[in-house]
Image 1 (spheres, rainbow, N blue to C red):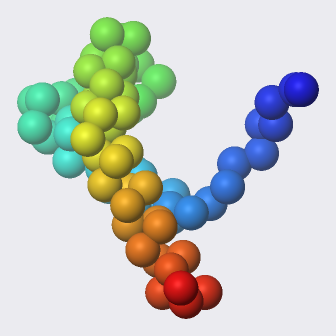
Image 2: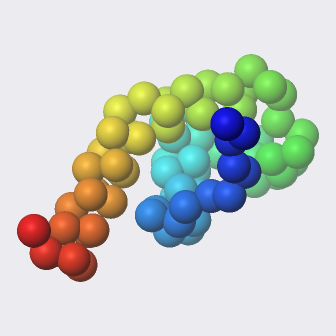
Length: 75
């Protein structure tokens, strides 16, 4: 079965952007992003940011989305 490229928007895109910038701050990369932009970041730098997001933050975001769905549709 082919995978769909369609994204389900359980999390607001602005929230994901906020997470990216928070991680960039923690890693000391925010100034470079602000001055040079995302397209000029190295793969290693973007990977550091994505790796942090892909860890515990995804678990938190999934838990929040599940809670939101339970509140919306009741259980």
